Image (cartoon, rainbow over all chains, first blue to last red):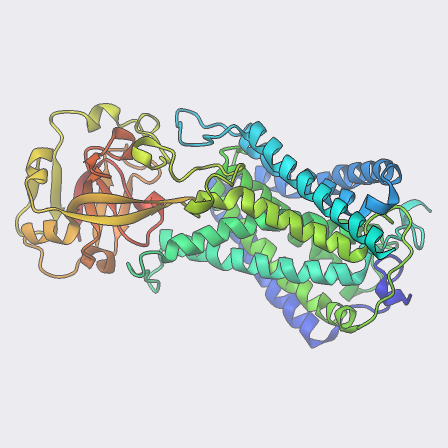
Length: 151
Length: 378
């Protein structure tokens, strides 16, 4: 496997060329406009709070989410039988995302508006997870049957 | 040592090929979100050069539905992409040259902006807003920052992605800690997660899927008179004034005959029924039958001949958000632009804008002003 196939390790070359510099100029003009907008409407955008969330989310991702997911992966993967590992880990990823996406409706505040967040989102998540793992079990079953027939 | 060690991340999941595929998907998703979001911004804050037509009536429903659905689907794609490139964050030394430093500096606006946009977006549509800023203003500023980061990043990485994807046969690596999932399996899981999130939420605007979308913040059939409500009369502070027997709808400004009509007088005028969609900026939409007086007929009664621009004023306190909205000439001229008093065959309930609300084709819900008391012709 060549170095270019890998993300880890050293990059073979530095960025450069006309495309890189043109895109950098255009990109930083857009970034500059966004920052200008941020301060031009400081009463609404609250630059300090904005910056805290902007940087905080990135830092939280790198220092909390990535290590946490790594730990779960290191714990989970050896415990899954190898023959079904692919679908099981895939279903675990889909489940984690669905759980994540169910958090905002669970934490949200509908205030005095009954048409806002009208569902039972815990039940909704459970149903979604049942569907995901049901489909995964069917997938595994079908592939095991296929493999047995082939051998 | 540690994560800085050469080859510390050996899983095939961290290959350039996966980064490229996910990068392409995210590049498309963020471009779609940026353009549809910018469009929504322009419609709500139109500069002089911008005009938004009343037809086709469904257009804003599609663009804003796509904006929210694409943003939601981008959540798993972004997390997958960050997972794939995570080893990159630990590159040592942090930069080798000026151009490499510039490329790495754009990662903060790109990654920070992307996470910020998706987090505030999904939070806002679910009324989970643990921040101090105004969502539309902050989301708008962050969009320019993130899209700028994206443009610069594409310029730096396009040739890397093209080279990675042009190889026909890449050896699947012997991966260590994540041997469970192949490189393709990981991409498949990310795509499946994006699909799952979409199915679980898109029913808030695609009515046939409303029962399937178990995590949607809205059900287009749930609400008073079968239509969801974005802001209640109580939270808008209009309960007393909207139900007062002294209520009048006035037509003033550049008119020959100023009008002042009670609700009964308004109901006595020739009315029109139209199937129109309320499309919320939050990404849900619901279509219903509305009956009311076409704005252009009301203006004709007031002796307005030309095609003017009109300000529609609510009973909400002046200066509060969405207390007024502007109807451009194209919307004023459309026969389906109504000052409505009936919804699905019944008088409007208070939360839908009793006694009279504006409802017009192809407009964001925040501009479908409720509890209308005054029409100002300019």
